[in-house]
Length: 563
Image 1 (cartoon, helix red, strand yellow):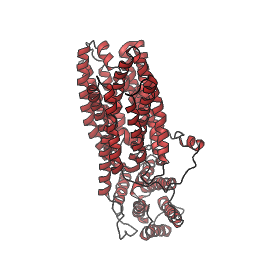
Image 2: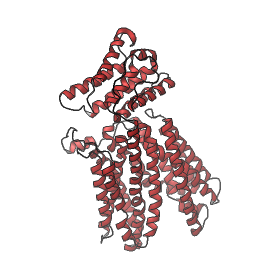
Image 3: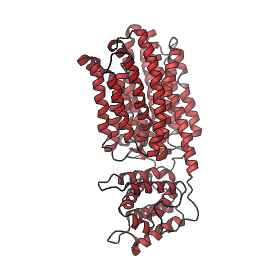
Image 4: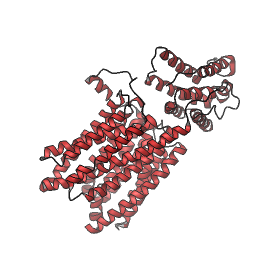
């Protein structure tokens, strides 16, 4: 956050003077809201710099959101007056000088203004958005300002669109690799653990595996938002995320390494739970890199790269598990170290932004409990509900796919294995293609909700195909159509979560709460499927999953902060 230069202050002051002279403002002579808020931001910055302090992050964040809201409202309600007052030149220049990483806060306020009860002039709104992006990325004015009242600065803002795009692309590719790195042990370790338990106690293997998976799921959820809250408050010269990414990766890998050496079920339980807790904590810290470093117009692309990494992790993890299935102790000792390598690579790739200037907080149980409070934000919980419903609908069927093929479609075990292998290839290929296509398209259109809603509808159609025939071909058709739904969903889901965060200063903690929507379906789906099978057979499972998929749309439609 650099000092606001003289020309930035002059631009605001000159525009303000022209407003007071009658070039703009409302009927009472009051200047437009964007100019007044821009002045307050400048006053805050200058005053705190005189005290050799940076503005508090919450102050800057709220003021920038106010600025975006006022800018959007004034832009489409009084475009001619704002043009005459030079508002469309002043605000983007000041915003660019305050720092390009804060543009997301400005756009959040701008998007809120676009959903006001009043009628929206979409053409003006889109031109405002384009002008803001141009100013932040090195431009000098708004596209709709054909008669600027304020002079342009002599020197361009320091933000560079080329460097920003390069950093976003590099970080996106790193997140693809990191997601692949933790996805391989995440998908292979449970299978190898089951093989190990079969060797330790074949008669009790199912019960023991259920105990470990349940305890791991519960403690991983708690660890996710706890570590997220601690990460948000970390003061370090290396930033708030990198120490946690590296530390939790090492903790997770060492814990899994101890599983093969354990000589009792209790030690196996503790070690494997440690692995899952460390893994969940690492994932939350990685997820927080999106709101920290990725601009809003690149979120869809980066989200699609993360989706590709997740798909590759699942596929490669299955291959790794099959390779070590006869020697699970060796496999468990080998698989976690790729995510440690990813954490080490991230230490050099993730932009370093010191957080030593953060205000230290008194360490106490009370403060920790306050930090762990769930966000009281309507849109946040709507996204949570939509994500939970979508994944629950999918997992309810995918989790029972072997039984569906053998009991519902009448396939023999060998045939069911071949169908599952082919369905896995179809699911990975279709999801991979749709992830790339719709992630980029989401960024270009700057829309998230239509893609999430479309994915839910397509998933419902895919589930309906299972009701049309008892031939195994119907299951392959389901896999093909469901792959499009899943790929579309994961390409936009990360972007939607980031854009709906109510407080970017608590991003990791809030993302930790959203991970519950990932874990909960795996816990509740088996029990739900069992109840539905007992009530009406597998057709009841398909109908129930369709209803849950459509219910996810009910959660997404009322969201207002994201388009």
